Length: 220
Ligand SMILES: C[S@@+](CC[C@H](N)C(=O)[O-])C[C@H]1O[C@@H](n2cnc3c(N)ncnc32)[C@H](O)[C@@H]1O
Image (cartoon, rainbow, N blue to C red; front, side, top):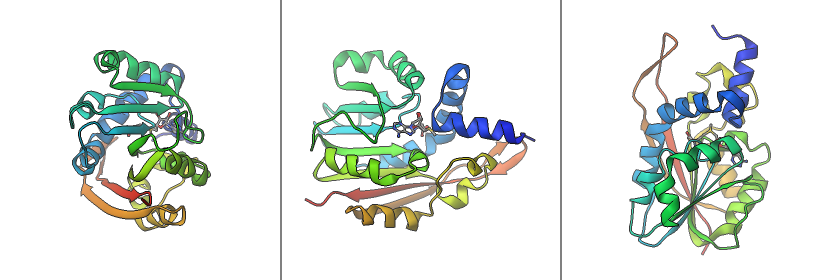
């Protein structure tokens, strides 16, 4: 069984992968969060030439799939872990070379983009780390075009409580609570998609999560 010190370390690494362990945690996130990316990409409305921003892309292993979801998409990613930006750059050389993928190191509380830049903004497994969601949601509203959609990918509180590390620094939400946060910041919740993930073995325990994707629109 993991000690409290280990649990705090894992929680810190999930919040911001860093140092020698960053590559290992990135690999684990790819495996654990693949069902969430599948749900997200199935439910985002992709239109040719759309501009899309992902916040907290982690390894960025999914960008080659994302670039092919419609014709001539323009994809930007921002992650505040320099290690993740470097990893994502190293495995997305082709996308970066075409100019259709741009990756930045930075915090979603201060997005380096002009007002109304994106049709779509999304993030997976990131909102737990926003201690003051207003800072981030305000920035997302600013960079979305009128009528643009912010998709939140997450596992709700009931799923996340299966992992003891979530006691350390995670802001957990039920799906209804997160929808209420979005609405209180001026978004209009327009979609709520959910799917049970495959059962997996977590150090001898059988665990099943539910992936959730909430679509919230900026008023037109
Ligand atoms: C738990 S990982 C999820 C990674 C990936 N989205 C996935 O689902 O596998 C959280 C990621 O979000 C990044 N992150 C957390 N808070 C952030 C913020 N305020 N601004 C930018 N990136 C952030 C972390 O560096 C990390 O790469």
